[in-house]
Length: 236
Image (cartoon, rainbow, N blue to C red; front, side, top):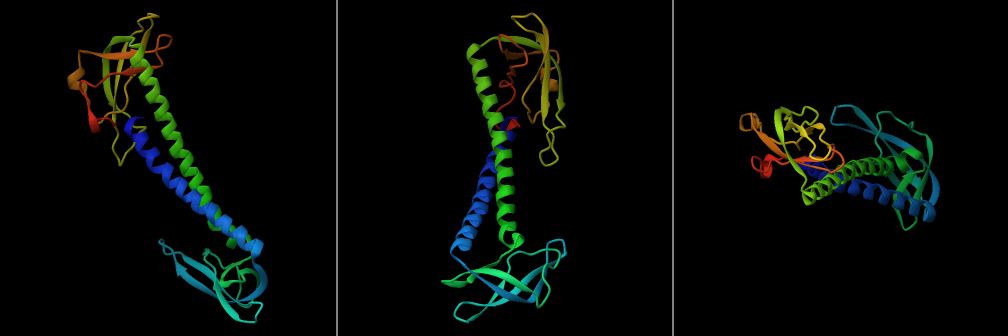
């Protein structure tokens, strides 16, 4: 997977962890408010309308309620939906912070858990995807290092250099070198595939052999050495 995997993992993992941390911090704040807050009822006085980036209409309820001192407060939900959950004049239950009544929330699953669950869920998914890419690349890096230490190599016949259409980076597909040769220990004919690169090496390698490092027991674990032709950012 090369630098592509490190790049994807390096972006997805921290972003995912950040989103997950935000989500769990929201959940922690909600738990604190639910534990120490005061429950009361309020009346929906309005549904504020807005539009999202696609132009779709969104609704956010505005609720009037009184604290234990009888002071009237106005609360607008931060949760916006494509439908209006509440009708004007409807009575709803709220939880508010007695030290700061402006810190309030409608006591419903949508208002209390939608944003925290979205951040925590998406963040966890992003982090897992990123960690998956990083772990695969780390495993491959350790595998290549082991192959280099064992230094069991062969000169494989160049077959072709073709684009790997399974990998798409901004509409670009990297190349892979394909070669074949006999395993130096088993004598079996095997096919080998290089890491993705941004070069078409067909002209350079036609009619030549390429060095390949292989595991002593299986040709499935191999590393096509292209350092003579590929360097730096030319690795995908």
